[in-house]
Image (spheres, rainbow, N blue to C red):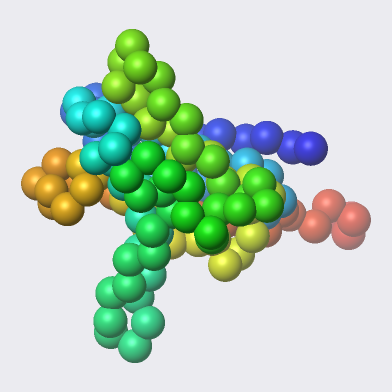
Length: 125
């Protein structure tokens, strides 16, 4: 299994956009000083000019969209770092991911996952 994790933390503690090759693993990390029961991870999509927030991790629990090992959230108690890992990334996983203290949009951090198709190296130059 290939694993490629892009840079995920900026100097100011916010999320950074990450690009991965299809079929690999991506992760985002954020630091939130709040109990696990108050932290949420969302996937944000736009469809027909409407923004939709799909919960991936809500108040300490993975949501059904993350079942079957599609994604996972880990927590480092010493640093208050929450890491979202998305396994076997596909084109439909592309979009914005947001970490926040639940419903406190001031403490929200978002970044874009960009999914790349590997170059076709079978053709000669």
